[in-house]
Image (cartoon, rainbow, N blue to C red; front, side, top):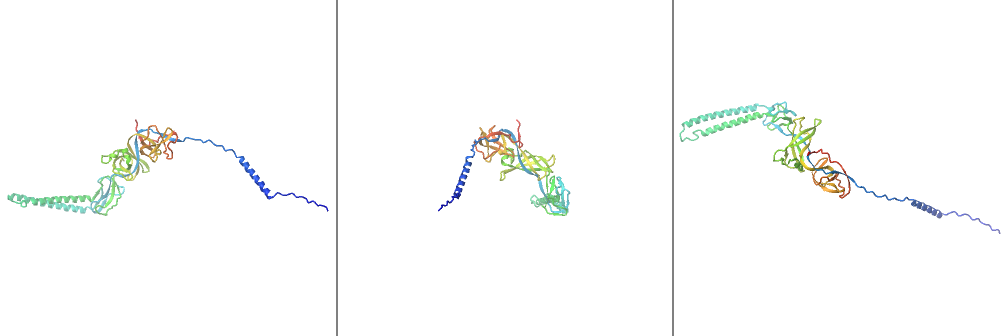
Length: 393
Protein backbone atom coordinates (compact mmCIF):
# COMPACT_ATOMS: atom_id res chain seq x y z
CA UNK A 1 0.00 0.00 0.00
CA UNK A 2 1.15 3.43 -0.67
CA UNK A 3 0.80 5.93 2.23
CA UNK A 4 -0.82 9.24 1.27
CA UNK A 5 0.46 12.45 3.16
CA UNK A 6 -2.20 15.01 4.06
CA UNK A 7 -0.95 18.62 3.87
CA UNK A 8 -1.02 20.62 7.16
CA UNK A 9 -3.11 23.96 6.84
CA UNK A 10 -2.19 27.33 8.68
CA UNK A 11 -4.28 28.19 11.74
CA UNK A 12 -6.15 31.66 11.73
CA UNK A 13 -5.98 33.79 14.89
CA UNK A 14 -9.08 33.44 17.11
CA UNK A 15 -11.29 36.13 18.74
CA UNK A 16 -9.40 36.01 22.06
CA UNK A 17 -6.08 37.00 20.41
CA UNK A 18 -7.74 39.98 18.68
CA UNK A 19 -9.26 41.33 21.92
CA UNK A 20 -5.95 40.98 23.72
CA UNK A 21 -4.14 42.96 21.05
CA UNK A 22 -6.66 45.82 21.28
CA UNK A 23 -6.36 46.03 25.07
CA UNK A 24 -2.57 46.20 24.85
CA UNK A 25 -2.77 48.97 22.22
CA UNK A 26 -5.19 51.07 24.32
CA UNK A 27 -2.99 50.74 27.39
CA UNK A 28 0.02 51.89 25.42
CA UNK A 29 -1.85 54.99 24.20
CA UNK A 30 -3.06 55.96 27.70
CA UNK A 31 0.40 55.51 29.14
CA UNK A 32 1.83 57.75 26.45
CA UNK A 33 -0.64 60.53 27.19
CA UNK A 34 0.09 60.59 30.95
CA UNK A 35 3.83 60.43 30.38
CA UNK A 36 3.69 63.53 28.14
CA UNK A 37 1.59 65.85 30.51
CA UNK A 38 3.52 69.13 31.01
CA UNK A 39 4.78 69.89 34.44
CA UNK A 40 2.47 72.29 36.43
CA UNK A 41 4.21 75.41 37.60
CA UNK A 42 2.98 77.05 40.85
CA UNK A 43 2.69 80.82 40.43
CA UNK A 44 3.74 82.85 43.43
CA UNK A 45 0.75 84.66 45.16
CA UNK A 46 0.92 88.43 44.89
CA UNK A 47 -0.41 90.57 47.77
CA UNK A 48 -1.53 94.20 47.06
CA UNK A 49 -2.54 96.95 49.48
CA UNK A 50 -5.91 98.52 48.55
CA UNK A 51 -5.92 102.24 47.88
CA UNK A 52 -8.69 104.41 49.34
CA UNK A 53 -9.65 108.05 48.83
CA UNK A 54 -9.40 110.16 51.99
CA UNK A 55 -10.24 113.71 53.02
CA UNK A 56 -8.02 115.51 55.50
CA UNK A 57 -9.95 116.90 58.49
CA UNK A 58 -9.55 120.68 58.52
CA UNK A 59 -11.76 122.46 61.11
CA UNK A 60 -12.98 125.88 60.06
CA UNK A 61 -15.45 128.56 61.19
CA UNK A 62 -18.37 129.00 58.82
CA UNK A 63 -21.99 129.98 58.29
CA UNK A 64 -24.31 127.20 57.16
CA UNK A 65 -27.03 127.78 54.59
CA UNK A 66 -29.83 125.34 55.33
CA UNK A 67 -31.98 124.13 52.44
CA UNK A 68 -35.75 123.74 52.64
CA UNK A 69 -38.82 124.54 50.54
CA UNK A 70 -42.32 125.94 50.73
CA UNK A 71 -45.28 127.38 48.86
CA UNK A 72 -46.07 131.07 48.71
CA UNK A 73 -49.33 132.27 50.22
CA UNK A 74 -50.94 135.63 50.92
CA UNK A 75 -50.26 136.99 54.36
CA UNK A 76 -53.79 138.46 54.55
CA UNK A 77 -56.76 136.61 53.07
CA UNK A 78 -60.39 137.41 53.90
CA UNK A 79 -63.67 135.85 52.82
CA UNK A 80 -66.07 138.55 51.71
CA UNK A 81 -69.70 138.45 52.88
CA UNK A 82 -72.51 140.92 53.44
CA UNK A 83 -73.55 141.74 56.99
CA UNK A 84 -77.00 142.76 55.78
CA UNK A 85 -79.64 141.13 53.59
CA UNK A 86 -81.10 142.49 50.39
CA UNK A 87 -81.04 142.66 46.60
CA UNK A 88 -77.77 143.43 44.80
CA UNK A 89 -78.25 146.57 42.69
CA UNK A 90 -74.62 147.37 41.79
CA UNK A 91 -71.42 145.37 41.33
CA UNK A 92 -68.08 147.11 40.79
CA UNK A 93 -65.99 146.33 37.72
CA UNK A 94 -63.17 145.10 39.99
CA UNK A 95 -65.53 142.57 41.60
CA UNK A 96 -64.42 139.62 39.46
CA UNK A 97 -61.80 136.89 39.63
CA UNK A 98 -58.38 138.47 39.33
CA UNK A 99 -59.68 142.00 39.84
CA UNK A 100 -57.72 144.48 41.93
CA UNK A 101 -59.28 146.69 44.59
CA UNK A 102 -57.76 149.36 46.80
CA UNK A 103 -58.64 149.68 50.45
CA UNK A 104 -62.10 151.23 50.85
CA UNK A 105 -63.21 150.72 47.24
CA UNK A 106 -66.89 149.84 46.75
CA UNK A 107 -67.30 146.23 45.60
CA UNK A 108 -71.08 145.80 45.59
CA UNK A 109 -74.18 147.56 46.89
CA UNK A 110 -77.59 146.36 48.05
CA UNK A 111 -80.88 148.15 47.46
CA UNK A 112 -80.64 151.10 49.92
CA UNK A 113 -84.37 151.89 50.24
CA UNK A 114 -85.16 149.49 53.11
CA UNK A 115 -82.16 150.78 55.06
CA UNK A 116 -83.04 154.43 54.41
CA UNK A 117 -86.60 153.76 55.63
CA UNK A 118 -85.22 152.26 58.84
CA UNK A 119 -82.94 155.27 59.36
CA UNK A 120 -85.81 157.71 58.87
CA UNK A 121 -88.02 155.80 61.29
CA UNK A 122 -85.38 155.89 63.99
CA UNK A 123 -84.72 159.58 63.37
CA UNK A 124 -88.45 160.16 63.99
CA UNK A 125 -88.32 158.08 67.15
CA UNK A 126 -85.33 160.08 68.37
CA UNK A 127 -87.12 163.37 67.71
CA UNK A 128 -90.18 162.14 69.63
CA UNK A 129 -88.02 161.04 72.54
CA UNK A 130 -86.25 164.40 72.64
CA UNK A 131 -89.62 166.22 72.54
CA UNK A 132 -90.89 164.08 75.40
CA UNK A 133 -87.75 164.85 77.36
CA UNK A 134 -88.23 168.59 76.89
CA UNK A 135 -91.82 168.32 78.16
CA UNK A 136 -90.73 166.38 81.23
CA UNK A 137 -87.98 168.90 81.94
CA UNK A 138 -90.50 171.75 81.76
CA UNK A 139 -92.90 169.98 84.09
CA UNK A 140 -90.06 169.19 86.46
CA UNK A 141 -89.03 172.85 86.57
CA UNK A 142 -92.56 173.94 87.49
CA UNK A 143 -92.95 171.18 90.06
CA UNK A 144 -89.71 172.02 91.83
CA UNK A 145 -90.64 175.71 91.98
CA UNK A 146 -94.08 175.10 93.55
CA UNK A 147 -93.26 171.96 95.52
CA UNK A 148 -93.53 171.82 99.32
CA UNK A 149 -90.59 170.74 101.44
CA UNK A 150 -92.23 167.33 101.94
CA UNK A 151 -92.80 166.66 98.19
CA UNK A 152 -91.89 163.19 96.90
CA UNK A 153 -89.53 162.41 94.02
CA UNK A 154 -92.48 161.56 91.84
CA UNK A 155 -94.02 164.94 92.58
CA UNK A 156 -90.71 166.52 91.65
CA UNK A 157 -90.70 164.57 88.31
CA UNK A 158 -87.36 162.92 89.05
CA UNK A 159 -88.25 159.36 87.83
CA UNK A 160 -90.14 160.86 84.86
CA UNK A 161 -87.01 162.79 83.92
CA UNK A 162 -84.81 159.66 84.12
CA UNK A 163 -87.28 157.75 81.97
CA UNK A 164 -87.31 160.48 79.33
CA UNK A 165 -83.50 160.71 79.27
CA UNK A 166 -83.21 156.92 78.90
CA UNK A 167 -85.70 157.05 76.03
CA UNK A 168 -83.55 159.58 74.21
CA UNK A 169 -80.40 157.49 74.74
CA UNK A 170 -82.16 154.35 73.43
CA UNK A 171 -83.44 156.24 70.38
CA UNK A 172 -79.94 157.50 69.63
CA UNK A 173 -78.49 153.95 69.86
CA UNK A 174 -81.23 152.59 67.60
CA UNK A 175 -80.53 155.35 65.07
CA UNK A 176 -76.81 154.58 65.14
CA UNK A 177 -77.53 150.90 64.46
CA UNK A 178 -79.84 151.80 61.59
CA UNK A 179 -77.19 154.01 60.04
CA UNK A 180 -74.61 151.24 60.49
CA UNK A 181 -76.89 148.77 58.70
CA UNK A 182 -77.28 151.30 55.93
CA UNK A 183 -73.49 151.46 55.60
CA UNK A 184 -73.32 147.66 55.64
CA UNK A 185 -75.52 147.59 52.56
CA UNK A 186 -72.33 148.58 50.70
CA UNK A 187 -69.41 146.10 50.63
CA UNK A 188 -65.98 147.74 50.58
CA UNK A 189 -62.48 146.27 50.26
CA UNK A 190 -60.96 145.82 53.76
CA UNK A 191 -57.44 146.26 52.31
CA UNK A 192 -55.76 146.57 48.94
CA UNK A 193 -55.59 143.21 47.20
CA UNK A 194 -56.68 140.85 44.45
CA UNK A 195 -60.09 139.21 44.28
CA UNK A 196 -60.84 135.54 43.69
CA UNK A 197 -63.74 133.07 43.93
CA UNK A 198 -66.21 135.85 43.14
CA UNK A 199 -69.81 134.61 42.87
CA UNK A 200 -72.26 137.52 42.80
CA UNK A 201 -74.19 139.41 40.11
CA UNK A 202 -76.72 142.27 39.97
CA UNK A 203 -80.26 141.29 40.90
CA UNK A 204 -79.13 138.50 43.20
CA UNK A 205 -80.76 138.32 46.62
CA UNK A 206 -78.23 137.90 49.43
CA UNK A 207 -78.72 136.90 53.02
CA UNK A 208 -76.46 138.18 55.75
CA UNK A 209 -73.33 136.02 55.85
CA UNK A 210 -73.58 134.65 52.30
CA UNK A 211 -70.02 134.46 50.84
CA UNK A 212 -69.50 136.50 47.69
CA UNK A 213 -65.73 136.07 47.15
CA UNK A 214 -62.28 136.40 48.66
CA UNK A 215 -59.61 139.07 48.69
CA UNK A 216 -55.93 138.57 49.43
CA UNK A 217 -53.00 140.94 49.84
CA UNK A 218 -51.00 140.35 46.65
CA UNK A 219 -48.25 142.70 47.82
CA UNK A 220 -47.78 140.96 51.16
CA UNK A 221 -46.74 137.35 50.63
CA UNK A 222 -45.23 134.83 53.01
CA UNK A 223 -43.84 131.30 52.83
CA UNK A 224 -44.28 128.60 55.46
CA UNK A 225 -40.94 126.73 55.59
CA UNK A 226 -40.60 123.32 57.30
CA UNK A 227 -37.36 122.73 59.23
CA UNK A 228 -36.09 119.95 61.47
CA UNK A 229 -36.12 120.37 65.21
CA UNK A 230 -32.31 120.15 65.46
CA UNK A 231 -31.94 123.00 62.95
CA UNK A 232 -33.40 125.57 65.34
CA UNK A 233 -30.14 125.96 67.25
CA UNK A 234 -28.25 126.40 63.96
CA UNK A 235 -30.62 129.23 63.00
CA UNK A 236 -30.99 130.85 66.40
CA UNK A 237 -34.74 130.33 66.18
CA UNK A 238 -35.34 128.64 69.53
CA UNK A 239 -36.44 131.93 71.11
CA UNK A 240 -38.84 132.65 68.26
CA UNK A 241 -41.97 131.78 70.26
CA UNK A 242 -42.95 134.12 73.08
CA UNK A 243 -39.69 136.08 73.01
CA UNK A 244 -40.17 138.53 70.18
CA UNK A 245 -39.71 138.49 66.45
CA UNK A 246 -37.04 136.69 64.42
CA UNK A 247 -34.90 138.24 61.71
CA UNK A 248 -33.27 135.44 59.67
CA UNK A 249 -32.42 136.21 56.01
CA UNK A 250 -33.82 133.76 53.43
CA UNK A 251 -33.34 133.54 49.68
CA UNK A 252 -36.33 132.09 47.84
CA UNK A 253 -35.95 130.74 44.31
CA UNK A 254 -38.60 129.32 42.03
CA UNK A 255 -39.97 129.27 38.52
CA UNK A 256 -42.68 131.77 37.65
CA UNK A 257 -43.67 133.32 34.34
CA UNK A 258 -41.45 130.94 32.41
CA UNK A 259 -38.24 132.02 34.16
CA UNK A 260 -36.25 131.15 37.26
CA UNK A 261 -36.56 133.99 39.76
CA UNK A 262 -35.19 134.87 43.19
CA UNK A 263 -37.06 136.76 45.92
CA UNK A 264 -35.40 138.02 49.12
CA UNK A 265 -37.28 137.30 52.33
CA UNK A 266 -36.93 137.43 56.09
CA UNK A 267 -38.05 134.86 58.66
CA UNK A 268 -40.13 136.91 61.08
CA UNK A 269 -41.63 134.25 63.33
CA UNK A 270 -41.82 130.56 64.15
CA UNK A 271 -44.93 128.46 64.64
CA UNK A 272 -44.93 126.65 67.95
CA UNK A 273 -44.90 122.89 68.45
CA UNK A 274 -43.54 119.93 66.52
CA UNK A 275 -45.17 117.54 64.08
CA UNK A 276 -45.05 113.76 64.42
CA UNK A 277 -41.83 113.60 62.40
CA UNK A 278 -40.15 116.25 64.60
CA UNK A 279 -40.62 119.15 62.18
CA UNK A 280 -41.54 122.75 62.92
CA UNK A 281 -42.29 125.71 60.65
CA UNK A 282 -40.72 129.10 60.05
CA UNK A 283 -42.71 131.88 58.40
CA UNK A 284 -40.80 134.11 55.99
CA UNK A 285 -42.16 137.45 54.77
CA UNK A 286 -41.32 138.13 51.12
CA UNK A 287 -39.94 141.39 49.80
CA UNK A 288 -41.55 141.89 46.38
CA UNK A 289 -40.73 145.59 46.04
CA UNK A 290 -38.22 144.94 43.24
CA UNK A 291 -38.91 142.86 40.16
CA UNK A 292 -41.81 140.50 39.59
CA UNK A 293 -43.90 139.96 42.76
CA UNK A 294 -44.28 136.47 44.14
CA UNK A 295 -47.72 134.99 43.48
CA UNK A 296 -49.69 132.63 45.74
CA UNK A 297 -49.15 128.94 45.03
CA UNK A 298 -45.62 129.29 43.61
CA UNK A 299 -43.34 126.50 44.89
CA UNK A 300 -39.96 127.85 46.02
CA UNK A 301 -36.66 126.52 47.32
CA UNK A 302 -35.50 128.26 50.49
CA UNK A 303 -31.86 128.93 51.41
CA UNK A 304 -31.86 129.95 55.08
CA UNK A 305 -28.82 131.73 56.52
CA UNK A 306 -27.66 130.04 59.71
CA UNK A 307 -25.62 131.25 62.65
CA UNK A 308 -21.82 131.14 62.84
CA UNK A 309 -20.46 127.67 63.62
CA UNK A 310 -16.97 127.09 64.97
CA UNK A 311 -14.47 124.28 64.23
CA UNK A 312 -16.56 122.43 61.66
CA UNK A 313 -15.04 119.68 59.49
CA UNK A 314 -16.60 119.33 56.05
CA UNK A 315 -16.69 115.76 54.69
CA UNK A 316 -18.40 114.10 51.72
CA UNK A 317 -21.96 113.06 52.53
CA UNK A 318 -21.15 109.40 51.76
CA UNK A 319 -18.42 109.31 54.42
CA UNK A 320 -21.01 108.75 57.15
CA UNK A 321 -22.19 105.21 57.83
CA UNK A 322 -25.60 104.25 59.18
CA UNK A 323 -24.34 103.89 62.76
CA UNK A 324 -23.08 107.48 62.79
CA UNK A 325 -19.39 106.64 62.37
CA UNK A 326 -16.69 107.18 59.73
CA UNK A 327 -13.51 105.33 58.74
CA UNK A 328 -10.28 106.99 59.87
CA UNK A 329 -6.84 105.89 58.59
CA UNK A 330 -4.44 105.67 61.55
CA UNK A 331 -0.86 104.49 60.90
CA UNK A 332 -1.97 102.89 57.65
CA UNK A 333 -4.85 100.94 59.21
CA UNK A 334 -8.61 101.51 59.19
CA UNK A 335 -10.22 102.59 62.46
CA UNK A 336 -13.95 103.15 63.00
CA UNK A 337 -14.70 106.50 64.66
CA UNK A 338 -18.03 107.83 65.98
CA UNK A 339 -18.60 111.50 65.13
CA UNK A 340 -21.05 114.27 65.99
CA UNK A 341 -22.55 116.06 63.02
CA UNK A 342 -24.85 119.06 62.89
CA UNK A 343 -26.09 119.14 59.31
CA UNK A 344 -26.04 117.16 56.08
CA UNK A 345 -27.02 118.35 52.62
CA UNK A 346 -26.96 116.64 49.23
CA UNK A 347 -23.17 116.79 48.97
CA UNK A 348 -21.53 117.40 52.32
CA UNK A 349 -21.53 116.33 55.96
CA UNK A 350 -20.74 118.94 58.62
CA UNK A 351 -18.98 117.39 61.63
CA UNK A 352 -18.64 119.25 64.92
CA UNK A 353 -16.94 116.60 67.06
CA UNK A 354 -15.05 113.31 67.03
CA UNK A 355 -12.20 114.18 64.64
CA UNK A 356 -8.76 115.65 65.19
CA UNK A 357 -7.19 118.18 62.79
CA UNK A 358 -5.15 116.48 60.10
CA UNK A 359 -6.77 113.06 60.39
CA UNK A 360 -7.46 111.18 57.16
CA UNK A 361 -11.13 110.22 56.76
CA UNK A 362 -12.41 107.86 54.07
CA UNK A 363 -14.48 109.72 51.49
CA UNK A 364 -16.87 106.73 51.25
CA UNK A 365 -18.20 104.92 54.30
CA UNK A 366 -17.96 101.33 53.08
CA UNK A 367 -19.77 99.15 55.61
CA UNK A 368 -18.09 95.91 54.42
CA UNK A 369 -14.56 97.01 55.40
CA UNK A 370 -12.88 95.46 58.41
CA UNK A 371 -11.22 97.42 61.18
CA UNK A 372 -7.46 97.03 61.11
CA UNK A 373 -7.25 96.58 57.32
CA UNK A 374 -3.99 97.97 55.93
CA UNK A 375 -4.68 100.52 53.17
CA UNK A 376 -2.89 103.03 51.01
CA UNK A 377 -4.38 106.53 50.88
CA UNK A 378 -5.07 108.99 48.09
CA UNK A 379 -6.00 112.50 49.24
CA UNK A 380 -9.02 114.12 47.58
CA UNK A 381 -10.41 117.64 48.19
CA UNK A 382 -13.48 118.13 50.41
CA UNK A 383 -16.85 118.92 48.83
CA UNK A 384 -17.30 122.31 47.26
CA UNK A 385 -18.53 124.81 49.80
CA UNK A 386 -21.78 125.54 47.97
CA UNK A 387 -23.94 125.27 51.09
CA UNK A 388 -21.75 127.30 53.41
CA UNK A 389 -20.15 130.69 53.66
CA UNK A 390 -16.69 130.51 55.12
CA UNK A 391 -15.77 133.20 57.61
CA UNK A 392 -12.66 135.12 56.69
CA UNK A 393 -10.12 135.49 59.49
